[in-house]
Image (tube, rainbow, N blue to C red; front, side, top):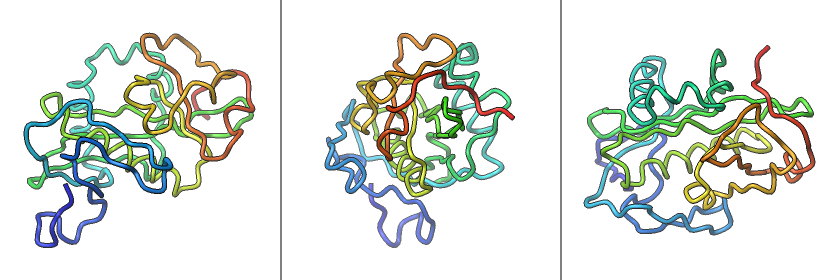
Length: 211
């Protein structure tokens, strides 16, 4: 929900740029009019702001991710890309309510393409389990992808549910020639190109960006 000038986040950056109670929104300028539907209609309006994560947020984010995915997440292929690797600077965001409680988080991690280029891998995207359906995850993805594009990255990768991420522009064809070092089923490996050919012109394995 767009905050009023006298609202609790007055003067703070990174406000949610659209109403979160809308059944569908159009993200201007980023995905050429793609409508992003609500998966679940929320029973009420949820006020929150998207802000950059601060150094003291790590514990709250880790707790939130554990609540969303459980300890089993550490056995997944995508976790190999994050283990021992820091997220990309300036690309970790949290959603907070007016009282400062962390409702959701998103981060982007560096991965190495077969040609040596580094691109972001989106995730994990986590939302408090009892607050799903209020548009928090959608707002975090929209904000995060806008931030990556403003940083000039040429493409973004994701391992996720096509039903959720396809409206943001992610699809399988850009990564048809690429592979990850392990299985991802029942999820799907997808890509989003801001610069055509960044992913689709390549073949080979995507690896963790470890020095």
